[in-house]
Image (cartoon, rainbow, N blue to C red; front, side, top):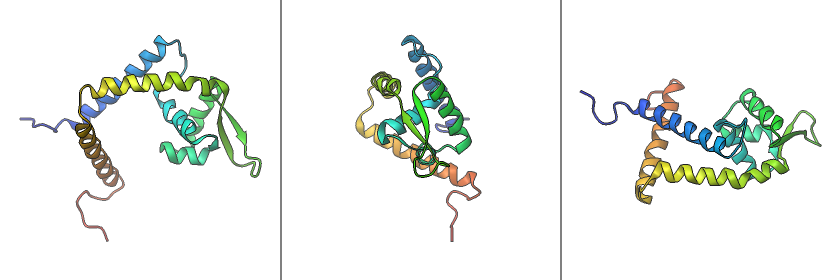
Length: 156
């Protein structure tokens, strides 16, 4: 017999899929073509931190360089960002928002707020905090387990 929580991985996968479907539908309704939810983290990093080296964006969005390169190339081809060589070190690529990327921020934030309202419904601030705290702890435990450590095991 299944107990509450036994299907946690399935429920998290369903939530992620639902969020992605919601975002794609809203983008389509707004006439935005070519963007995917995976581009959102890169845009947020640039909205919050301004122009910055790809390495800094990689760290911020928790993606490796090759994945970020693919995302950045797509955003550049759509006109949301541009890539520039660092003036002090040509090996470093700087990501910058374009006028189109800056102008997109208002719609991005509106859709993000709609998503939050939809996901949270009438949950209280206390419920949101408790859920996010638990989810963060689960994420840390699974990352440890995936790296070879065991949750709850003593570490030297």
